[in-house]
Structure formats: C-alpha cells, structure tokens
Length: 377
Image 1 (cartoon, rainbow, N blue to C red):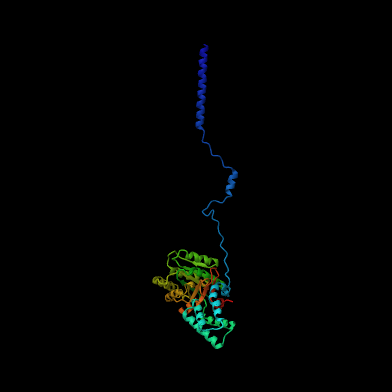
Image 2 (tube, rainbow, N blue to C red):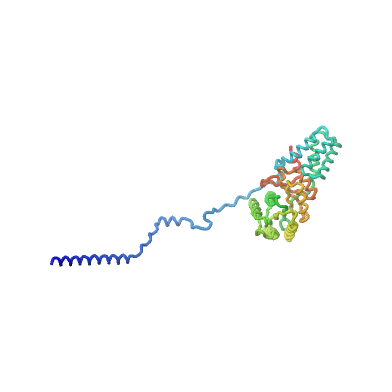
C-alpha cells in the first residue's frame, strides 16, 4: 500500500514539473522583441544645435581680398631709377669716365662710340649722337665735367625722343570705352604686363574691363583674372581653346554695357615666324573693330633680347597697326639704349617700361626722366 502511494506521488510530481516547463516555453515564445532603448533627451537637444551636414561643410567661406589702390604713376619712373643701376654703370659711369679725360682725341671718341653700342643703342643712333656731341665740344669749347655732363644729357634726351607722342589713349569717348589690345611674342611676360597695365590705368583713375583673349594657354585667363581682381577690374573670359576673337568682342560688349573707361584685351603670345598666328591676330582686331576703332595696340618687347626684339617687332607691325611699345625687363642686365633702337627702327614710341617684378614696376615712359635715371648721380 505504501509503495503504491509513493508511485502515485512521483507521477503527480512529474506531471506538475512538465506542465510548468510547457507554460514557461509558451510564455517565452509569446514575448515581443525587445524595443531599442530610447535616445537620451540631452543628446537629442545637443544634436539639434549642430548644423546639418552639407557639401560645403569643412570648406570655410573666404572673404574677398580688399581692392588694392595702386600708387600714382606720376613720377613713377624716377622712383624706380635704382632698377637701372646696371645700365647706369654701362652708360653714365662709363661715358663720364671717358669724357673726363684731359684730351678727347679720336681714340677716346671711338671708346665713347663703343660704350654706346654696347648699350644696344644701334649703329645709326650711336653715330649720330657721337657726331653731335663731338661737334658741340669743339665749337662750344666744353671742358669741365659739368659742361660735358649737361651736353651729354641734352643729346641723349634728343636721341631718345623728347617730342614723341607717348600719350596712352585710354579715356572713354563717343559713348564707348577706349579699347587697348596688347600683343607680343611668347615669353615676354605679356599677360603679367597686361595685369600691371590694368593697375596703371586704375591708378590714373580709369575703370577697366579685362578681356582674356589668350585662350590657348590654360593659365592665362586665371592669371589675368587674379591681376584684375586685385584692383576691382572684371575679367571676361571664354572656354579654353575657344575663339579669341569672340572673347575680345564680348569683352568690348561688356565694357560698353558697364560704361567703363577702358577695355584691355590680352591676346595669345605667338612666334613672329608663324604666319597663321599673325593672321589670326589681325582677325581679332577686325572683329573688335565692329564696335569701333581700336584706340591702342601695344607691343610688348623683352628688353633683354636686344636687337632680336627689333626683328620680332617688325613682323607685328605688319600684322596690326602698333601704336606703342611696352619694353619689359629693362632692369638687371638689360641695356637702356634699346629704347632708342626700337623707336628708330620701328618709328613707334616706347610708351611704358617695366623695371622690375613688383606689381607697380610698370611706368609711363618719359624721355628726360629716363635719361636722368640712366646717367645716375
């Protein structure tokens, strides 16, 4: 009997345990998936104070650089006279040493002639200057250093060209801006000269639009635009490799619409031996002249090329009507006599000279100031 009761108790206990496990499993299966933890309120508030991400995040907006005010051009050539120091040593010191000799014989005058020729003045101009100076010394009886210096200065000013018209025609007229084209061979610093010329014009009170018609050199338009932005001049440009005549035409059109004083057009540098490129230069000018005549066509020449620069210049004067010369790199090893050679050979006045690498080292040319700078103290 007792055994029977034990068996029954075990069966009841097993039944209870088995039932409990089934209930637990069913309850576990019925539990919903755990919900993600709610974000903390403090983090939400913090996130709302942060600007939403954008494409420009991490690239700070740069303020436009202030517009520069170039120094006045009046007297700039004299302020840059130290840049002609090497030319001074060639002409001023060398000539004065010769003329200070006790006897000015034929041999001395030949040395004077050689000194002038070494300055790239050219044979014709040198011969003329020496003959005039020699005659004055003989006829006027010049002997003292002061007298000889004064005579030399007068004759140099005469041969450089005191009376040549060096006016830059950059004022608006007839209801439209003046148009200035800048041309030249590769490597003369033409685009840089354009940028410096824009500064010259702004310094003289002109408002300017730049035309980046050098579409063949990738960096030319960017370079010109950088120069223009410094003085508040807008640059009109076209696609790389585009039609330069079209860009030049659009620049003048924009200049007319904006009512500026001057439109300055930078053209592509080209070798003077390439006929097709020279013909294209003529096309640019013809297209621009649909708006009206080009007021100035300035030829940029590298003074360090000496007489080779004169050869290059002749070809440009045949392609377009050059009205003035910009002589760059006249500092350093350049020789001041090249001014005379260029003018005599081309019959075109030097209107601007570059005397250094600074932004305001381009100066309007003045014959007397230039000679004073060459001769030194």
